[in-house]
Image 1 (cartoon, protein in one colour):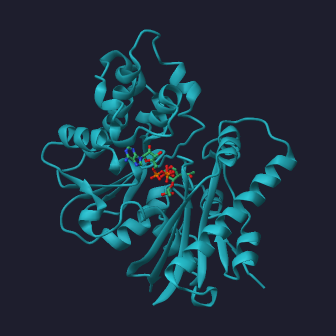
Image 2 (image 1 turned 90 degrees about the horizontal axis):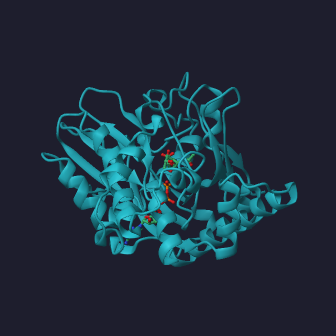
Amino acid sequence: MEKYIGIMSGTSLDGIDAVLVATDGERVTLLARTSSAFEPTLRRRLLELAGGGAVTAREWGELDAELGQAYAAVTMQLLHESGHSAGQIRAIGCHGQTVWHQPAGPLPFSLQLGDSNRLAADTGIIAINDFRRKDMVLGGQGAPLVPAFHQRVLGGVNHVRILVNIGGIANITVLAPDQPVLGFDVGPGNMLMDIWTRRHLGQPYDKDAAFGLQGKVDATLLASLMAEPWLALPAPKSTGRELFSEGWLDARLPDDLHPADVQATLAEFTVTAIANEVDKWPAGELLVCGGGGHNPLLMRRLAAQLPGWRVDTSNSAGVDMDAMEAMAFAWLAHQTMHGMAGNLPDVTGARRPAILGAIHLPG
Ligand SMILES: Nc1ncnc2c1ncn2[C@@H]1O[C@H](COP(=O)(O)OP(=O)(O)OP(=O)(O)O)[C@@H](O)[C@H]1O
Ligand SMILES: CC(=O)N[C@H]1[C@@H]2OC[C@@H](O2)[C@@H](O)[C@@H]1O[C@H](C)C(=O)O
């Protein structure tokens, strides 16, 4: 078994997750995990950029460098906490921070910031980043990439098992007997709820759904959110803050709703978009990972909308729901180092499987 580090900072912009795994490509064992919150000013600047705000080339480069430093710092923290040295790690798979994802149009691209030259040089470990663009050059969405990892660690069961990651965006992976793996983004995860909670409570997210649980769902608002045409598009598909933004939400909000009712409706929107896709399959098991698995309102409403399904977190199947995405990028680094493909063309729509990522040597 070789040891790899995976680093994920996702669309919620809550901070950085890092894991240390042992893997031979088939089995992936979590050895250690740590996380680090974004410094508030860095988070604000990233949010501005991801919201389409204008930045100068200098600001752009500084953000790239600062994120590279932050990824190196979390790596050193992980090594220290787990009692490992750089020499024991084969490579780091670093997702980077998505600041723009544009899978459609004449010039598709996906940009993740965080300088991996800095990550490699500062840690002394090979650092791999830029996992999405090869798939896009080959006609794919460049996302989601985690379904191949889901298949590896949770596949091979004889019933329908669907994974749903509820991060900023929600994405599903369908593992069904005798079927190719399917996976695509289904809509917002926590992103709109986070925006609303910040605006009304000044808090980064609705911890344990304390705010949303006080409200009731507004059917008219829910219908207007569900009318978003992107939701009805066929897979392959992926999305992000570029679509489900604060402006998108404001354009659909009536003036007279109680804030807690809006929050309850946003939770129901996330759940309904997921349940509509899951319900297309024979009832089986729905395993939730990502931060949304900690939200009791989302978990309760998923179970209510999906009678017949066993709804639980991925912990119940032996994979830490909070470590899943970072573990996937550690595994993707393994794939790249061994010259093996990381994408699934059935998922992303790429013309062929491809070796993903850019390798940065520390020397
Ligand atoms: N105790 C909790 N109660 C309610 N919500 C929670 C709780 N813990 C985490 N969350 C939600 O989970 C979010 C973070 O999820 P996660 O870390 O999976 O997102 P991400 O990795 O940034 O996103 P993505 O998967 O889209 O890239 C928080 O912003 C919050 O909305
Ligand atoms: C462009 C981008 O960063 N996409 C993320 C985002 O967050 C969740 C969802 O949208 C998913 O498609 C993807 O991340 C995971 C790690 C993936 O590629 O599977």
